[in-house]
Length: 613
Image (cartoon, rainbow, N blue to C red):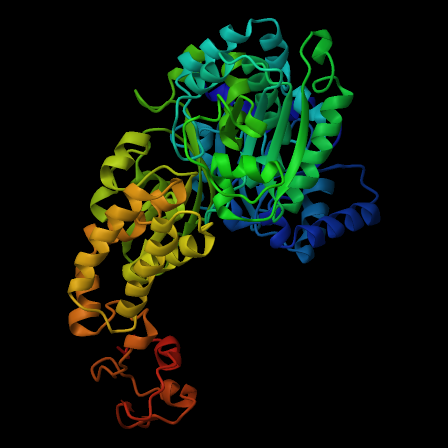
C-alpha cells in the first residue's frame, strides 16, 4: 500500500535532467505563483541550466503556497514552501547547480521507499508517506502532473480503466461500482451503482450524463482543485459512467467563477477527443459520447439536480417536484444520470483496481476516501483526503495542526450552509455519512470550517442563513418566506432586541421549513440554526437575557470596559481611539467613557494584553 501511494510522487530515478514543479492552482496563483515562475525561468536562463519546469495543480498544502518541488536525477524530491521570487536565486544556485538542499526554505524531502526527512514540523507529508491518515487516491495526480498534459495522465495509468470498461458489459460496470460501495460525494450520499442501474433500465432515443461542478458552498474548493489539478480523471470517470447507463451526450456544469478549471477542462476535452477517448466510436468501440461544458452563472440553487437541468436547457434554474426522478425524465425529459466531480474521480480507480480493493477503504457503510477543504481557525488550511472513518480530531489537530494562537477549539461546521456545527464533545466522531447525520451535521460536499472560542455561534447561524436566503430561488413559500422570517429573528437577537419566545419560534420554523420546502436548499437551510440551538443555546440566552455577546463578535452588543488588573498603562488604546473616549496616562489605568464610545472595536483590537473586555 505504501509503495503504491508513494509512487504517485514520481520515480525520480528515471529522470534524465532536473525537474522543478510549481503549484499553479488557484491557491498557488493567489499566493504569487506567476511571479515565482517568472523568477525561476529568468534564473535558469541566467545560470544556463537545462531544467524541466512543470506547472501542477494544488497538492493540498494551501497554507504553505507557493509550493515548489525540486527533483534531481537519482535524488529525492524536495518541497519548498512559502516561496517568494527573491528566494529563487538561492534555490537554483545551491540546489539545482550545487546539489545541496536549502534547508531553511525546505519543508521536507520524499524518498522512493516512502520515508520522509522533515526539515520543519510538518506532519502533512509524513502522514502521507506512512499511510497513516491521509491517503491520496482521488487527488492522486493533483500537484504531481501537469494538468494540461494528457500524456502525463496516460503515463500514470490514465484511461486504462476506460479501455477495461469498454471490454465489459454496461451492467457489469454498474455492478462493479455498486459492489465497491461508492456513494455520491455531492452531499446526498446516494448509492452510485443504484443510481446508474436505475438510469440504465429506461429506454429512450437519447440519454444524458451530467457532472455537477457547481461548487458553491462557502469555504468549499475540493471540486475546483480536482478540476484544476487532474481534469482527465473526472472526464474518464464520466465517460465510464456514460457508457454504463447508455448516455451518448454529457454536460459538465461548472460555475463561471472557476476560470482556471474551465480553461483546463476545455483543453482536456479537446485532448480526449484527439486521442479518441471522446466522440465517435471511442477507442474503436461502438460507443459514442460527446461532452459539452456549460458555465453556470453562480446561483447556489443550481447545484440542485433539477434546477441544474433547467439551467442547461436555458431556463431559469428552479427545482421541480419529483417524481418523476431524473433517471426517468431529466434533461429535456430524457433519462439522465448526474454525479458530482469527486464521485466521477473515484470511478477509474474502482474499475482499474476492482471493487474489492476499494471496499476495503473506509467504514462498513461509507467506503473510500473523502476530500475536505480544511479552513477557518486552523494552523494548516488546505485540502486533505482521508479514509472514511477518520475522526474530526485527527483532521483538526493532526493534519490541521490545531488552533492558532493557543486558542480553544469551539466547533466545526461540516457541510457548508447545509451542514451543522459540532462542538468539542464530538471531536472523536468518525467522518462517515451516518455518524455525521446522527450528530446533527452532514457530509455535504466537504467543506470543513474550524471555529475557535472567538466565534459567536448565533452570528455564524445568521451568516449561513443569510447566504441561503440570498440564494433561494423563491419558488416555494416555505423557503422564500420562512428563511427570511428566521433571518429577521436572528438579526434582532444579534442586535440585542431578541425575546425568549424567539427561541421557540425558531425551533418551530426550523422544522417547518425543513419538512415543507421543495428542494435540498430549503430543506437544509435550517441546519446551522438547529445545530447551534442544540449545542450553543447558552449563547442565544446571553444575547437575549443579558444583552451580551460572549465572544464580543456582535458589534451592536459591545460594551467596552477596562480590566484594571490587566491594564499596563501603555496608552495604546488612548492613542487609537478616534473620538477621545478613553482617558488615562502612564501613571493611571485607562478609563472608557461609555457616553462618548462609538463601539468601533479599535481599542479591543489594539490592546496586546487583553485588558479591554
